[in-house]
Length: 436
Image (cartoon, rainbow, N blue to C red; front, side, top):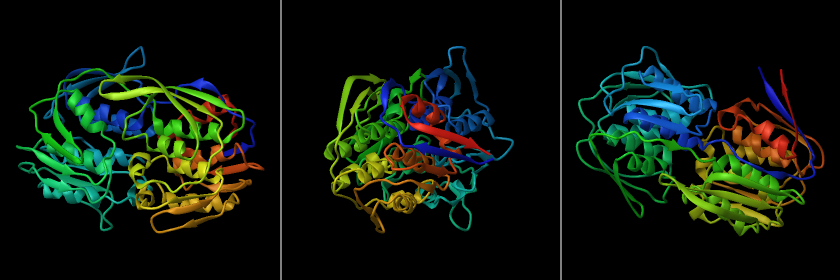
């Protein structure tokens, strides 16, 4: 079964909305409540294919997770040592978060297991987690290409380490943190640039002990985590498509309620503000240790900028949308030091560059970045390469294109934003979904 979007030029976006729950926090809530003691409720869990892959894996690890009558998920945690050997290999689907975080957690268990994923996930690099975990005495085997499937064998004990991150990645950091919960003494991680800290926040919220000082993270192993209810805020990475769509449209205003505004996730907002975007953050509050608020967006005239390196890690998932903003800005936008974009669900640098060129936007692709000249987006047919964020980015480009934009291979939008089509249509995007 294949799926595509057809976008016709639209007039504007307007409305008050709530975007789906944060994907990163949804994954971590399932993982950490499963290894906590007691019963915890998850309110606002993102019911996407990626998060449901994590949920299904924990059911195979003998954790009781059920949806309640009020649509929250009830997790009956069994503690750090309560997981059971699965009777089959564990399918992560398209979810790199599931695979990388669970490799860290499962490397510390007293049973063997195997993780695998779909064709796209099976091409993504996994040595970046197997290397630090092997330094912790984990027994992990990858394919000959250093990709999934991943085979994990039990070890006598997990060894604490001091590890300097070669890549600024929250997935790598979280994988190490989850393994380090089972070490006998503290593990230290040193980041170059701080990355999203949802894992650290949630572990501390559940009674763990992680210190964060500048770029140093110290994990003090605890005997247990205690289950609590978790409220999942709206996902800022999903909200970004709405934000950019509103900014580049004329006479538009959108209010997005209860979005996660973790300081290490708002790089995209800061970049857009530097480009001249009219964005306000209101009604700030906290869900546990996570900052949450409303985002009010207005149509804006954007100018090209050189994107500061300090915002790259905190905007890493937002760049497909930001590239569309850059295509609609006056002048030149320059991005360097973003080679990590080549290792997402697709090589987002090259796939976005190719799509922008097809839409009449001049750009120059570099080894670790891209230079985009603002211009007028024309109609075209874009292959998203099965990358959900590429598909959604070119969908919002269709708002201001001179002719229709057709986006192929959009099925994987369901991995992060299952209701994208309906929500954007309600806001004013002239979008049609065709399934064949």
